[in-house]
Length: 300
Length: 332
Figure 1 (cartoon, chains in turn brown, purple):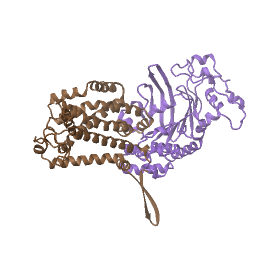
Figure 2 (tube, one colour):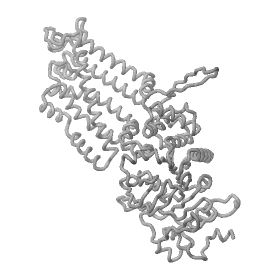
Figure 3 (cartoon, chains in turn blue, purple):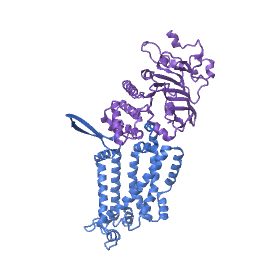
Figure 4 (cartoon, one colour):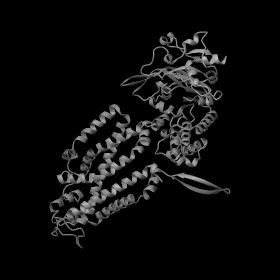
């Protein structure tokens, strides 16, 4: 049921009043019932809180990047997740690094989603020449490995987190353009779109209000998957030296640092790896729940 | 009487890769104020294309409106700009679609879908539009509390009522109903029809009712136009068409309906099929199927000629003084 029922007494008579909920309220209400999605949200919120707290508690120069002589310490009371090859506390770095990983992956996915969806919706809705132009440009980006694109962008603009974000968005948008186009095309020819035009809806309103909400499921799924894979892409780029510059505690960078010591000091890889895994898992759970919650047909 | 809609010599083609589909070939008719015109014809006669042309919504490509004019309240629809068209659609002319199952957006509550056209055309705020939408729902016989339900939570008949509410929300001067009851069962059909009739009479609208169901026409329409292969073959008041049939095709339509008074009688179907609109026959497009066809019918295209009063017919043989349809002979 998508409404609340309130009974008020007016002049001795009972009158029922119905009030609708907004889309956001409705989605949240349904999301709350989904255990997986709630675990995902709780994990992500906790992670964000932890990384915020960590940026106040730890001093970047002293605790995060400064070397010490306690190298390769296994997890213990002093360093609960151990230390790395430079003697830095992994627990501090994992928490502190969460913000880099999250900002880069969420940011690049968001930019890619916005640009890709816009282009894809345009191409899918109008078809013909616009479709051809947009999709061929997209194909060009799709055919170049994202690492190549990133290397070119970063070497042109210089190494920084912002540029990495842009470079990854460039590698991401073609995915969304394709999915956006395909799903818009399936909805475009349905009768309610024609009916919408018959009551005089402007084109942009038709696309935003009627076409896109009907394409949400594949887009949400792709978004959550892409956030996860972008965390991993960022780490590969960091490894190549075009991503985050070395002392920065980005998860992917920490993972690749630890690879050389995986036999002797496995915890160097284990903990950043677990952090990536749980974050991606939480994002997927959330995405799955969101998809179900936003579909009025799955409502009970 | 004042005319709400006047369609003149309309020609619409679909230019596909396989060839040119001649959907509408010189269609002319008009609708007077507060009258209901029934547009009748077989599948493929071009009824829906005619309706879409009135809204200038013929899918382009492949559709091309190649000629003619459509005058709506004194303005030519075919020369309107996109902005003007958006203002006209839904406000001056509204359309009820054939299948209510697909005409509603599945992810938006029905109340909001009614409110949408009010927001656009009457400049109401979201809340005001929603209130008005609830009133519209009550008018079509659905409780206002259902305004927040999604289309899949309503039955077929209710969905069609919602579609009607959307169409009537802005009080258009002309309502186009494209086979509004085809997707509904007979009981619901009667309900929906009487509801539509009532609402239209109350708000002084005109209606173009597209259907292939002559029973529906008899129940609802003041005037009837019979369409064949993109042309009007006979047009007149319901009484003219039903009781003083002049065109062989119209006669064929009536003969293929069972008669309540003579239950045992055989039905006489119209032989053959609707011609392929890519290759229309020369001359009168009905001649290959017409039991009265002569040599002249194969070469000469009949024009719509006045029979008497508002009754027009397009048949070459009508000019012969001795010509008489079998139906009329039987009656005599």
